[in-house]
Length: 109
Ligand SMILES: [Zn+2]
Ligand SMILES: [Zn+2]
Image (cartoon, rainbow, N blue to C red; front, top):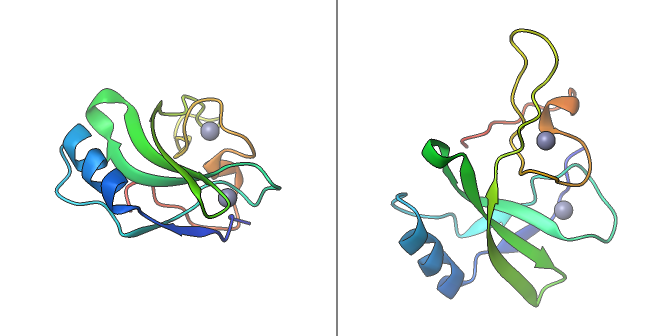
């Protein structure tokens, strides 16, 4: 099950994300992309720059602590010749997105 937490994107961080990436806009609110987890940080995907294999994430904990982080993509793909790649970042907690077989997860959104 995917984590059900959402967070509004703070305006200053949204602006910063736009400056750091080539995308025309960022979502006003993002959902945590991790599988359901305990009291650890939540990570919502802001922009995905496929060219460089990195993405900008909004990391938050509770309601006050939010942070913009640039993270390399998770390199672990599902086994097999046509294995899905993981939509998360390197060294993330919890499962890879392709392990969450019960749910359809789109990388690009
Ligand atoms: Zn979460
Ligand atoms: Zn992964």
